[in-house]
Image (cartoon, rainbow, N blue to C red; front, side, top):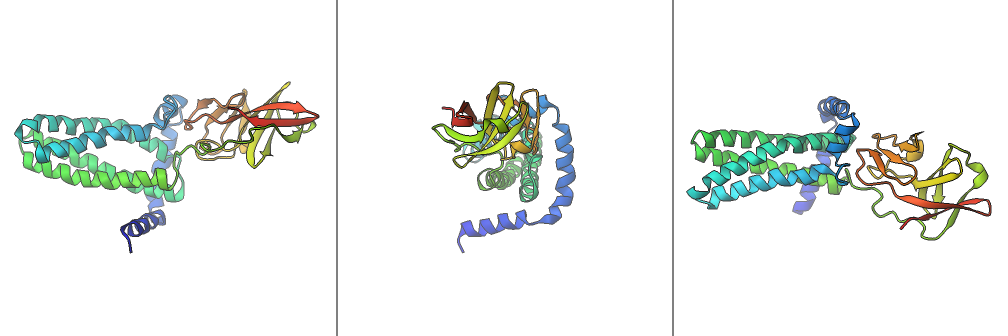
Length: 286
Ligand code: FES
């Protein structure tokens, strides 16, 4: 059996460990409440920068601790101070990294939540080990500090692999409409008479699920698939010219798909609309 197959089996085993739910669910529920304020949600999700924040932040502790390990091994005594600073940088930067990761984790379900719990356990172990390493270094026990750092790197690598599995294997926080193009030419999707003021409909536009909403004389159209994790927007709630996703509460402007509230970080694809011969027609914008 190849290494990849063995690792895949380990990932599957973790995903099926329903016994982890008793630990993870109370934490997920608590985090979900803590990040409910829009400002907290938007900041930790990355809505503010238009990109998931957690993968960006992970670069700092991973980079700092990796370089510290390198200096520990090949840097010699003249690099000791630099290695200590890098270990400390990793510890400090791990805190906002953890906060953004917890925010993302609170949106997961079932197998993803279980993998997320093990991921969190691994990177927390790394943080504890590097904190102990920093203490040993400060007290002059550099050899022990280096060993703790190396063990911490092992935990960090395991945690990093699990995080990568969540993103690239399970699609957590991947823009679900990144490849959605929709019809480039006008396509009829609904008789105009069937969409009253303040009403919405889910329609099919050449195989793409599109959400229509009428506001007075205007008809707006967005992709019906939430960019965050694929929630069905037609099952959401509608108010103030916006739709709220039923899964994690992202709020999009119906007029143009702009984000009013995360966790979504990618704006919702919008479609041009017109009425032609009594039919509402849509086509993809740009
Ligand atoms: S799927 Fe998460 S907010 Fe829509």
